[in-house]
Length: 445
Image 1 (cartoon, rainbow, N blue to C red):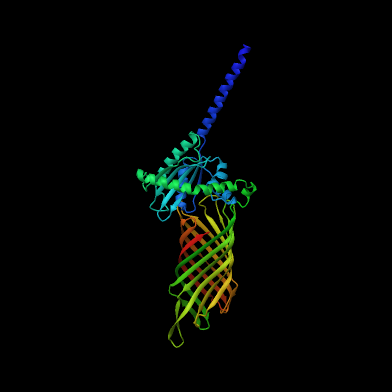
Image 2: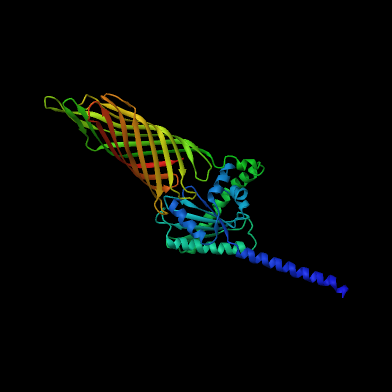
């Protein structure tokens, strides 16, 4: 009996080992897939949101913003192999999903699946889309099917070697693969791109491999932030000034107008993507001509100018911790509203100026690339010229409708309206109303 105990012990140990191995396998199959989406810079928000929805149905979507911050701390490009190996592979990722447009002009949308362990390319999908802002449902379904097959390979078989040839599929607008000849051309193109980039990425990865761990926590995505906007539109100006004989009134016809805006500051690495800095805004008329009636009854045409200038501190931060979050831009500074002419008019040229407060709120409309901004504004008039007045206020605001072409480039429409009331020595007040509507383009650095 006792002689058989060693054999019985070995037999039980083998059964236990087999059971643990089987349990681990079951656990691995039952665990949700870990996916990390890495958008390329020129992917529109609508295309990114559609892709995220596809990924969420097939696994757990890891934080893109946290990955990007860690890459920036190491000064690595998030889509590079060096970044995937040094930063992404630490997060137990099953599949990296890189997506972006090869060219916005020809609307070629590329999705690349890379192995989470070796970073090897597994699949390359190219889609010819009709619009860069929309990913049709058939294309989404095709991406989902390819991802299902990729996950089955990654989680059911040993990880592929880094040099394994990726599967390339060229897909049309209907989401179906093209002809075999076109797919072969796409595969050769992908292989050529892979070979061209490989040496640079490997060199970058090896060069950074010996950096201290402290560097990864330094900076956390913080750095210089800037934006530049310019626009063209129309404007109007209406002024009423009390005089000893009544009121002097000036109302312009719609005139051509220009708008320029600039922001320069510092971007923090907080979850809410805050940025702080200095802003300047400028509205001006172009070619404004006014007709003024003289005392003898004759009229004359005078070149004039209507302007609004402001500069101050601005802070932007997201209101929610998510990708397409509503956000706020709080502005505080000093501004001036000017009216001038080349010759004296019934209404003299003057300046109204003072500190302002401008809290702006911007809201994405659904999951698409369009957002709406509501920007109230109030001034306290502390300085004025050429008017027998003692101060007052300006109140109004702006409405913004924006369309994100890509992350760094926006177009939109701004409607601005502001009314000033200035106290005088009489019960009547100086009244000044300005209105602008501008088609604007913005670039975010």
